[in-house]
Image 1 (cartoon, rainbow, N blue to C red):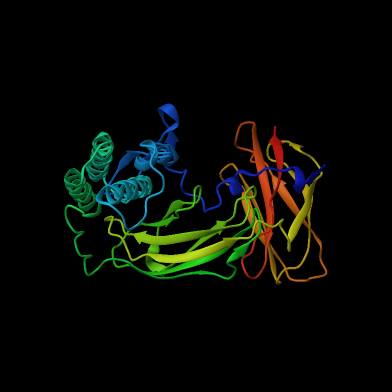
Image 2 (image 1 turned 90 degrees about the vertical axis):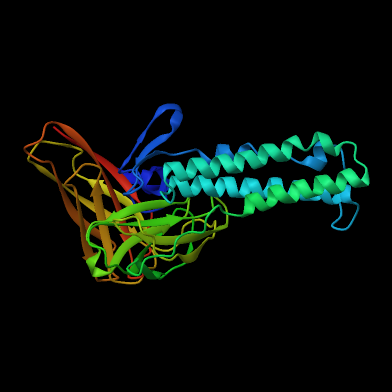
Length: 369
């Protein structure tokens, strides 16, 4: 059987960030996800931030009143209109950022509710001023401008400054990727370097202001001061830049400093190292038995290459190395457990070069009977 990569769709690259985001999540009602954050935050129900942004789309105080573009210098009425429009844009930006912070376990439920309510109250207050803007004399415009400025101060001022980080807070010293420009569907391995004093598991967070990019995962034993991860680019998007922000939280929930790394998604068709096909002798395999296969690869890459195979069932996965650039095909064996009932396992293969740049994936399903 031959499986061509051109006809494969692999869930791994539909969410181009390292696994872990879905491990503690389950779908709830209305498409929301219930998610278990590390202590002290606990269980949350994530919001759809794209729907939050839609609430503000098309809202323009000056536009709703039939007023053309207003100049930075002008009457008090024009200034009030301009500042009202600016405030709506600010509130949208803050509300979406607040949603993203909550979804990535940066706020407790009570903190999120309080900040969400304050943001929503400011938004409603701006909208209630719209009717007052229809007919204003200079004195009324000055008063209304003061009201808008008061709302803006409330929107941009936090109730309390964040407490200073404790002296034993974790520190994130570097996030390294050998390649920072990726073609469509490509992804690259990276390394985080950190210092952490608190014992126990730590959580790595990766966030971005680009829709669809974000993840978190747990480092069970952070004592080495290093952790691996990967980031990628969607296969169905044009050129864009993803501004990643990475941070680490210890088991107490204390957050490290942020490290920002921009990754360029070129929008080009994948080039370089590719896996062209995977062949297996049999797709129906008896329990306790095995089947042989080969993976074929081509294109430039920095040797040695690593070939990776992983299944979507526990206990299925292995890696092996290819040192010789003349080799374009390598063999493998896939086995079915003897002590499990009948099951299907989808194997995914890809290759990575010495820079950590990964090829496209190719998948094949084995039926263990």
